[in-house]
Image (tube, rainbow, N blue to C red):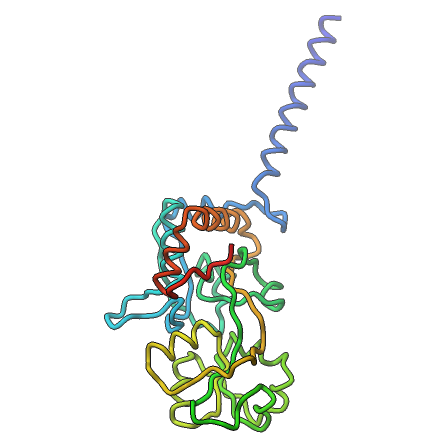
Length: 274
C-alpha cells in the first residue's frame, strides 16, 4: 500500500509540474499564438525605435538645425522615459512604412498615423490619441473652390502612402482631372504655390501648422472634410505586450497632465483624446 501511495504521489507531482510548465508556456503569447516578448525585447535593447516621415510637421519634422522635433516626438520621448529606455528616431520611406514595421526595422510607427481598415488588416493600433480630418487646402484667391464638389475636373495633390488611400474611397477621386502623388506634403504645397495643382488634400493638423508657420496665402476649404479620422500608434500584430504598455503609459500621462502640457506647447490647447 505504501509503495502504491508513493507511486501515486510521484505521478501526481509529475502531472502538477507539467501543468505549471504549460501555464508558463502559454503566458506572454499574442493572438497569433506565438511567444510575445516584445516589451522585454525593447527593454533589453535599451531603446524604442520610432519610424517616421521626418517632414510631417508638427508631428515629427526637422528644425533649422536638422534635429527631429514635434508633438509626436515629445509624446514618444516621455513614453520611452517612463518605460526606462531611450527613444531612437528613424526616418523611413513613408510609402513603405508598414513594410518597415513588419520587417522589424522599427518598433513603432508614430507620426500622425491615421487609423483605417486597410492598415488595421496589417498592423495593430494603440488607442486613438488625436482627432484628425482629411481636408482641402486651396490658394486664398481661388473663389471657384468652396466645397469638395468643386474639385471635379481639378488637379489634386496628395501624399503617397497616406492620404491617397482615403482619397481613393471618395467620389471626387473619380471626378478629378488628375491626382498627383508626392513623397512629402511640403512638395505638394510647393506645387500649389507654383499653381501646378489646384488643391492639396492633407491632414488638418499638418495643414494648419504649415499655413501658420510659412505665412502662405492658403486657406482650408471650410465645412468640407473628406474624412473624420483618428491618429494612433502602429505596432506589429505580434507585439501585444509592447502595445499594452504604451497604452498604459499614455493613459498615465493623460491622468497626470503631461500629455496636456505637450499639447499646449504645440497647439496652444489640449487636443489629446481622453
